[in-house]
Length: 171
Image (cartoon, rainbow, N blue to C red; front, side):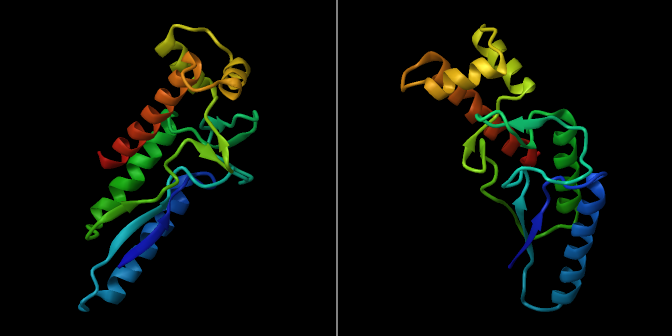
């Protein structure tokens, strides 16, 4: 049996909500103790499925979608990475029979490609030796065709971001 925990950062401090979720897991674990039920955790939402709408948010970098709108927290932000690392560590310390990740670990939000934030643009420019702005990169990716150097490099960075974030969780 998987207990669903939506651990995307919400509110400020984000750890307050995360601790409430972990406490809810503990309560369910106590309820099933002594039964044949083996309790695992579904990390239902890590990056989140939608744009953040909280009134108070952590000061972490937000993703920038291809339309230029801010959305979720960027998986390259060190503060957000530390939050996810700590939440997963605390969940793992509860010794669930398994931890499964949700499909929100991806590079798009609200059906729109991301991320074109300063952290991703800097990583893209470092990887390619280019010096594009966020707006220029969004335009080139939007206009790109299969085989286009900018588009192919963006896809490579996109995949690396997703894999690195998943690896962060596995640590």
